Amino acid sequence: MERMFGVATYMLGLIMMITMVLDAMEFINQADPIPTVLFIIFGYVLCVMGYMFTRKTPPPQY
Image 1 (cartoon, rainbow, N blue to C red):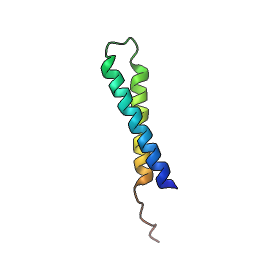
Image 2: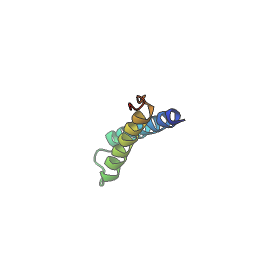
Image 3: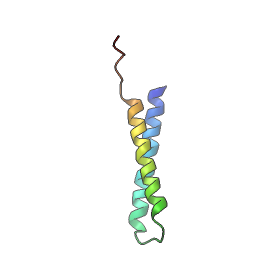
Image 4: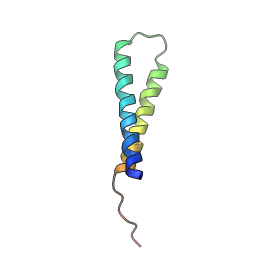
């Protein structure tokens, strides 16, 4: 279940980053680029979260 959540989160973040980068490349001279940058950063954070959920963690050593 955690793995599915991680994959979904990773894909959502990747899609957000790609769409916003393409959007920013089209509208480079827009008046307020701050929301675009925040959206790209949020997408990157989602990608990292998804990666952390999908990687295998070793069992705890006692």
